[in-house]
Amino acid sequence: MDGEDLGENVLIHLDVESLNLVVKHEKQEKSEFSTTRKIYSCIKKKTFATFVASKKISSLWHCCDEAFSDPSSIHKHVSNVHANVIDELTSAELDQMLKRAKADDSAHEYPSDCQSKDASYWMPDISHISEDKLSEGPGEVILYYCYCQIKEPRFICDWQNELCSKLCLTGKVRVAREGINGTVGGTKTAMSLYIKAMLAHPIFHVMQVEDFKVHLNKLECRGKVHLFQ
Image (cartoon, rainbow, N blue to C red):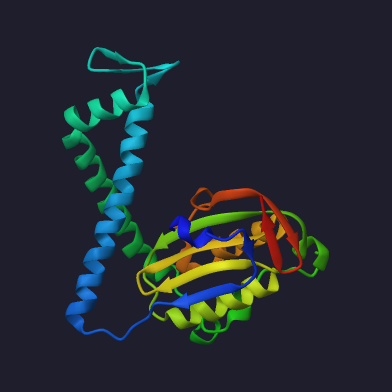
């Protein structure tokens, strides 16, 4: 998610945008290829970071019988010397991810077509939480994205609209056939419920709590107007 989505210091509206377009077969194949490249790039960054982190002992990084004192030097070394290793590890992780996604498709089908299109079926229970806890007090803004197959984005848009409205959240959520990304703000209680709802939805079963990054944690919520410092 680009920083431009947080160009203003007041979050007032919720914008759920569907990028679902009718495309020809060749355009769909191109989109899928582009999505795979994006996933590969994301995995490569994580692989690179993990590889570098594994070389750190105390305040130094040790690799190939050399010691590096600053991040830029170890990053340059890994890029120049271990590029092939990073590529191999990335490719292996991508293969495993695609296999898991394919295997999980059948295991995470909706209980019924009716339930899959009914936004209320995937709503969190907030009967035990006061409205004030959802709309007033300290909050935060989170950023997230998930590359996954969304066959009917309009139903996810409906669900996101209802979910965010119910939890008094504001921000921007983009939904497309190849995935979802969002910048969402609200009270910490509401954000916790939002993340739980996302993780419980079968389409986003590949996500983990760590995928929701806190961008701002000094948010002051006043109803549906969220001010951040």
